[in-house]
Length: 227
Image (cartoon, rainbow, N blue to C red; front, side):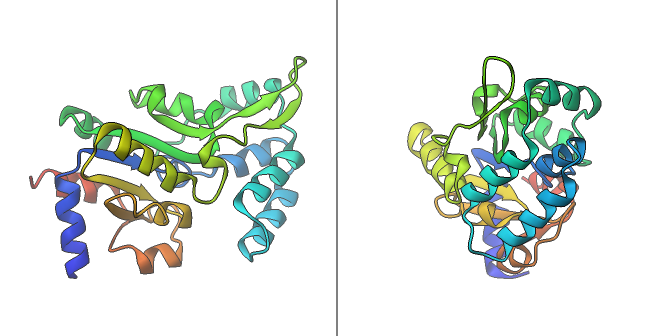
């Protein structure tokens, strides 16, 4: 065990706030990909995602273009939510319950959408005020009208901004970010520690750069209970 991992484990046991990514972390799937399948735009969105991963496109541009392809409406989202209940990663309910029992603040910080993430928060007894995500806008007839670009999570550095805000607003001294992606990794600092999660998707950069990388929420729960 390396020194950075030992330090991250110690910070985890002493955490006063924890921020979780949602797609491929709290939930097993990537919501925008599932929504694209539902809208029968899976191929187009996948090709765009691959282009974005190769560079030359910002997070916000990629988000905008994917939504333009999907053209989500209020009816589409309502039908999607009815047929796609949250697909939670095994162990997340027990872990969040333990964090709540210990009085540790829990947040969901995601580049996804409130419409899909808020039901996940409600299922996990996380207050909706503790959810930081993107908001889709609609015209009066329910058709797609863009998204709220003022949300910090709509751009690459948004999760770092949220972590900085939470530390400043509430005075957290040991705020931990947990996630599977590069934007989660980039949130530390200002997060005091980052734990890479590979239970659903293993991103090589995250695995290499995270001081502590886990593939199960049971690992985090076991470490927490050592305290």
